Length: 242
Image (cartoon, rainbow, N blue to C red; front, side, top):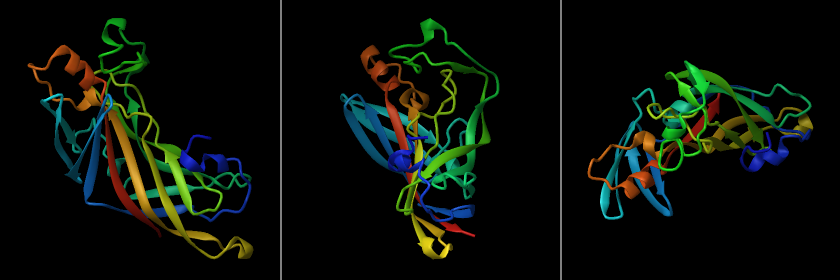
């Protein structure tokens, strides 16, 4: 609970906080910012809201990543934080804690230890995490977040889901959402209510190997570098409480 962005320190606070519970309608930017990180090199590129092909030049060689939001294996930001969301504050003693029902990845099979020969450095599973022996399916889950002490911002950790099996793509643990809160009323009059979410950002991240378009001419060292890359997808949003 203490890890939800900058607001994590407020998770155990019992101070007054605006009421954020209810149904929120979301509006998204019509663009997707993509950041590719390979070792110490960072490449930024913009795409339309539905994704597309990202081409970078790394070590003198063009590399392509297919960011296809229509693919069931890829959850783009506007899918991770959908067109409307339900927010609850179920713990009266800890009002800064909030829960949001969001889409999430689930394993249709069994989580199992990977083949040692198929994981480790230079693979899609460098840390030899458990893998899903089956498809990654889209479901729903409750995501924990924290409203900061002043009550004007929140952070959520969207979570990592399950590990990739080399075919499916699992979200990395840096996936997050945050926004500023505009409110009406005040704690003094017991009518403090959040009305809009402003300057929102949803970030999802994947291992580079998930989206790598294979190139048979790529050298072993460069291939390993690409497999260990990360891709961060970011989009902005605003929200209005119904």
